[in-house]
Structure formats: structure tokens, C-alpha cells
Length: 171
Ligand code: HEM
Image 1 (cartoon, protein in one colour):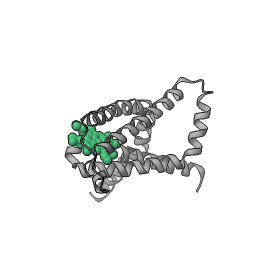
Image 2 (tube, protein in one colour):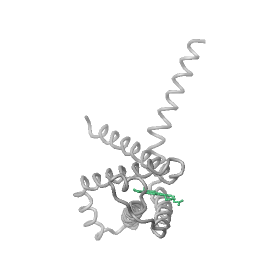
Image 3 (cartoon, rainbow, N blue to C red):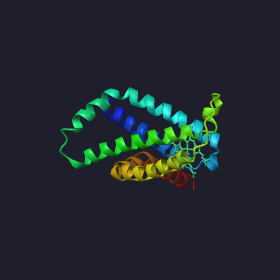
Image 4 (spheres, rainbow, N blue to C red):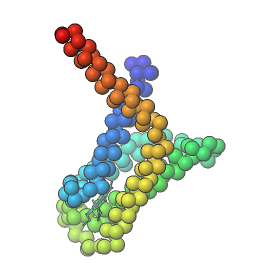
């Protein structure tokens, strides 16, 4: 496979994973709609995926962290800081979620006392995540629009054009 088609494949994979994460996050933000059990098991599975992803990218993380201290441009610095904040906030959401768990933790035979401040903290950190995610999306807006145009809108427009061409030939 040539390097350009390989990077096109990587970009498509990234787009699909980003869409899945975004939809998963929207589902996680409404536990009353999904039910608490699905909310907990889905997010714990996501956490396992995130940890695996970080371990697999460890070399890259070490490299970027080392480079961060030599960066001159503001944008990649801001991007890096934002990613670190997203990670810290995600860890807090998970920790507080585990502390108020009604399905995942009891499943292992562990019973935790009700904790109202943890509950409030869980809600607060989840709301803060929306703000951080909004900034993250804003920083990557050009990539999102260009990739969605190239891999979603244009293929659909092409299909529609082919269909109407075929209809014209039939008529
Ligand atoms: C991406 C990760 C997560 C997000 C974005 C998230 C978000 C939320 C939100 C927005 C609520 C509603 C808060 C309210 O309106 O009172 C909630 C409730 C809850 N979450 Fe999570 N959560 C996540 C992970 C977890 C995890 C890992 C667990 C436990 C294993 C968990 C357990 C709970 C429980 C038990 C409630 C219900 C609290 C109640 O109303 O009784 N969450 N979560």
C-alpha cells in the first residue's frame, strides 16, 4: 500500500473513531436515557480502551512531552495543555463515577456508602468535560470540516450524481 493511501486510511480511521467517541460521550452524558447499568459498563469499557491506547502510544507521549518544553508556537502548546486537562478531567469523572457506582462496583460484591458530594463532583467534572471538548473541537475545526467533506459529503454527492445520471439514461 502506498504511503498516501495509507495516510488516507489513517485519516478515515481517525474520523470514524472520533465519531464513535463523540456519540459514546453523548450517550454517557444522559444516564437516565441509557439506564445506569449501560452508562457504567459502557464508560468502564471506554476507560479500558483509553488506557490501552495510552500504553500503546507511550513512546509518542514521551516524545511530545519532551518537545513541549522547546515549542515556540502558541497553538500546539495550547493543544497539548488542553489534552492534558481533558485527560485529568476524564480521570476525575471515572474516579467519582466508580465511587457512586450502582452497577459495576456492586457486581464485584463491593458495596460503597452513598456519597452525595462525589455525585455532585461527578456531575461537575462531566460538565467541565463539555467545555474542554468544545475548545478541543474548535482547535481542530478545520480538520473536522475538511475530513468530513472529503470522506462523507463528497462520496455521498458522487453517489447521488451517479444515480441521477443512471435515471436520465433510463428515461
Ligand atoms: C465518560 C465518562 C462519564 C461521563 C461523561 C459521565 C457523566 C454523567 C452524568 C452527566 C451524569 C448525570 C448527573 C446528574 O444529572 O445527576 C452521571 C450520573 C451517574 N454516573 Fe456517570 N459519567 C461517566 C462515567 C461513569 C462511570 C465510569 C461510572 C461508574 C462506574 C458512573 C456512574 C454514574 C452513576 C451511578 C450516576 C447516577 C447518579 C445518580 O443520579 O444517582 N459514571 N454520569
